Image (tube, rainbow, N blue to C red; front, side, top):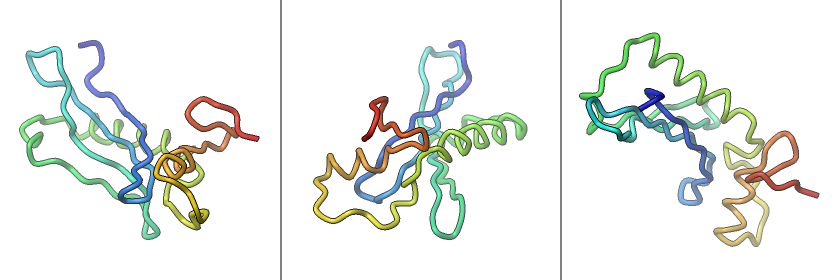
Length: 112
């Protein structure tokens, strides 16, 4: 596997927030598993680690680097905390709204 981790951003309509899922490499396999989910709440940045991946150790510097990288990527999503949701959105509409970026795009599409 070329990278020890990957980050996927998603609009979670159940929790009404944008999240960064962090996957790390499984030793001796060409696979990755969910290691943590990073998100921002009204109280600040939060991370949920997954017990099943606790055996997948990362050096402290690597863990800090991947969490900072995820935070940097997530910081460009303007509705990441799910504050002031417009009324009348469908689940698909809410997910799209959560994915709006500070460059005026959502999921790669320009917004008008």
